[in-house]
Length: 87
Ligand code: SF4
Image (cartoon, rainbow, N blue to C red):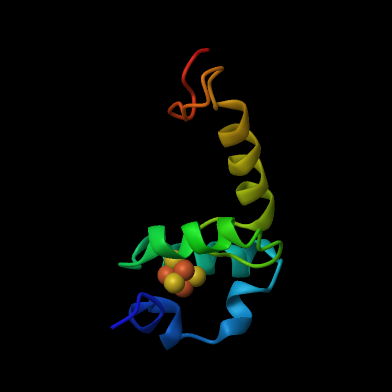
């Protein structure tokens, strides 16, 4: 069974995940918080640079921020450092 088949959002109206209102976003994030495949979903969204919607519990702005911080955290020797690590 693929991670998409285990996605919790399959039980809900997909519109919830693409409605940019704060109320809908909070609801989508609450669903994601209980999803067993949240990290797979987030990794997929980051890999395809998904701009819109809540994926893996993060909205588009939050995913962009995560990607920027990840790029900045790549050390001088090309190794990935934990986000938030002091360089
Ligand atoms: S984490 Fe991804 S797969 Fe899981 S409910 Fe949220 S959007 Fe759906």
